[in-house]
Image (tube, rainbow, N blue to C red; front, side):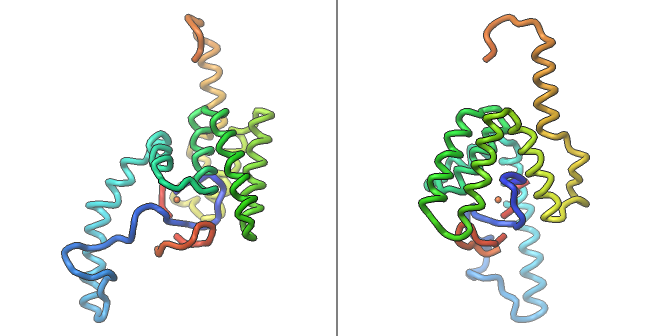
Length: 199
C-alpha cells in the first residue's frame, strides 16, 4: 500500500476483482458452508498464484512509479502519488510539477474531500521549497502506519527513515572524491473510503 501520501484507509484501484476462470461465477459461491469453504480455499490458491507475484513486481519505488504512470487517466490522486514516488527517488523538480497539477485538478474537481488533499500537496511544495521534503515524507509515513494500526506488522522504528537515508547518501557523496559532474474490496469512486494494497 502506498504509505505516502498520508492516508487513514485502505483502497484498491488496480485491475479488477479476483475472479476464478475455472468456475463461471462473477461472485464467489457461498450458498452453503461447503461451497464457502471451497471458495476460500480457491481464493488462497489464487492469492499465491496471482496476487503475491504481482506485488513482487511492484515492490520497488521505481516499479510502483512505472505502474502509476502506466494508468491512462492521470487523476489528481494519481498525480499526488506519482509526486511522492518521485520525491523518494530524488526527482524533486519533477515531483513539484506533478504536485502543482494535482492541486489544479483538486481545485477544479471541487468535491468536499478535495481541499484537504490540495492542502497536503501545498504542504509538500512548501517542504520542497525549504528542503524539508524528506522529513515530511517520513512524517506522513509514520502517521499512516499509526492510522492504519500497522505497527505490529510494520514497526516504523525498524525501517530506515527516508530523511536519514537521504542524509547518509549526501554524506557518502560528500566524502567521495569528485571525478565529474554529479549527475493503494470492491472498487469505489476515487476519494471515497474503500480497500487498496501495496507494500
